Image 1 (cartoon, rainbow over the protein chains, first blue to last red):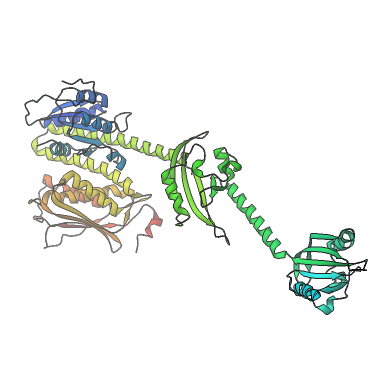
Image 2: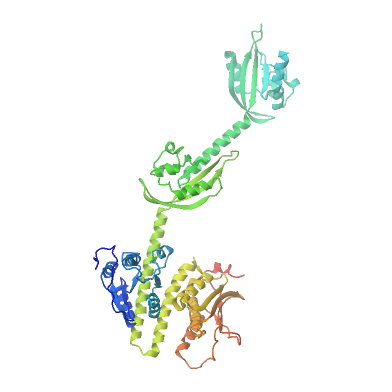
Length: 141
Length: 465
């Protein structure tokens, strides 16, 4: 098991029995939005891990916990592109981790350039059905 | 032979020559003199110089030369005489005088060579005035500027340039812009555009450089350059202007970050509302769930319409064509997805709508298009055409699909008819009229006429054709 402090090592998650449901890490600085998103997602049968900022999320990524998808807000408190940086670090540690970004702000080309390869973007405010569609598409079948 | 040659020379020199005896009477003059002063040999020879041509040569400064200076000196060169001659007008003459003595003649003669330098003097004055004017214009321009030679070295820098960068004119002269300060201007991209200004006559504008400048701090400069040509001179020079846009840039950045902040908060609050509706839906009886879902989608649509309005807004109005394309793109991504075989096409004339009405207009398009997608294509493929055209001075919005078509209207209020209710509300709000459905044909076509009223009365003129 690699040290969780060593950021250059890829975190290896022990193989677990996969069911239909997935473990989804939700990163959102507004805790009420975070809780409500968590509730929607768990209603569809997934496990949710809630994080209020990038550091909290990174400690989950660095741990051995199962994470099948990262759903992160881009604008995390003081960090304007906090979600982008987090996803880049997360993918370095867990290659092929599906990422869905969200923000209410407009998406510029400069921002898009920071997105990790193969990631998706859902605009705020997102409806439950919309998010469900994005998550279904992002998870490996 | 020698005498002949001398007279030939005298006759051919371009300067007017006259020879005076000791009494200042003209003994002879050359052709150039007669031509320049429009006189003749008979009028001239033997005449006292002051009496010549109605005493027009009785000039105080000439008297000084002939009576006070010449007697004491063998020669005088470059004596300037400025006089308003009655026939030939204001003239500036350059007079060279030389005393000539012949053998056995003690009194001698005076040879006067008179050169008309009037035009040269006028040109010189003009040029001096121009250069003063240019320099004062250059110095009053608040933006620092430099004039460069074709080899990119500095010919001159404006006072504003010298003040801003704390250097002297001497320190700039002959140096390249790239060598100034701490080589902040030594940027390959700038060099590239500057090299094209003279050979290709390609001016550039708005070349932005953000750097730390000693004594100035972090600054943003906007550089503009163009070729300047001097009349009669084949060498071209370049005018390079440095506009300090630091404050403007900061204001723009502040405005963007404020609008991002506001947008972030609004969207988060809307997300909260959508989340709460989704939460309520969990405890709601199944037949009502669809209504809760539609509500979430409509809140999303309103939020997106605000973004689209700010993107398509041209100051006071919103470009309908851009706006429709953005709405279509949003519906495609949120409802259809990449693999969908349902396509939304936009055909729009370049019309504009006031921001006040842009939201209900967007909601109307959203409702009609969403209805078409939801009900017209049970097979999962087809096309929805959203078009806007100017018809009889009204804006006509058409949403047409090539789907299964509408079944007969049902008098009973059913949940799925709420879309039609919303359409009616939005049309009423926009002051429009729904055209009666046309019978026959493929699919469903909804045609709505909307008045072209804009918030600004002067904006009407460019809409009415």
